[in-house]
Length: 210
Image 1 (cartoon, helix red, strand yellow):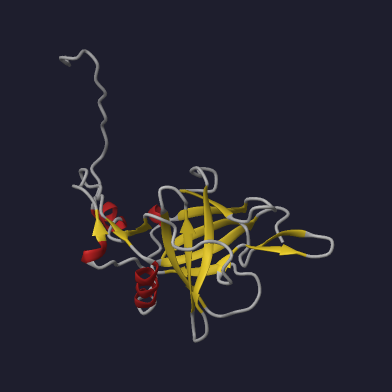
Image 2: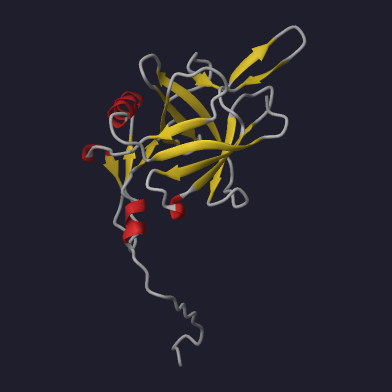
């Protein structure tokens, strides 16, 4: 086979159903151009602590490898999040993600924010990244004591007036949801009334994490 440029790559593959690919993008990515929460507030984690003999960072969740499992059990869309502590002088989480625990992307500084408590469910958001802005996971859980090891991951169905994006790239969508803090809290409360997207569960604890 001849090619005008003299150089070509030929990719051959079996036909497959694209519906699942499109379905994976139905949920809008939720993004804010600037982080909506900063450390120092009572509802933003991790927190600094200082005692007579120790100092460091306190986390409300177990650190380590967390697995997102879709509600429909489709293993093609499982995602692993590695959540680790940054340090002891500056408190934040480092969060990376991938299709399995060993294929993690670069980590991004992140915070966990409780946006409501009381009642049958607490609402939380995970704020991932600092520059340029942050992405958000909407989470819920029963108000149980102890170290958190599981969340429900809520849907991200944003109103059309809040979406941005350019033209689609083949079947890849470029639209995402832009949000203020007020809008994000309202979205989380609205999504809490719908079936969750799936669960986020701690699988392997980080060695040495307390």
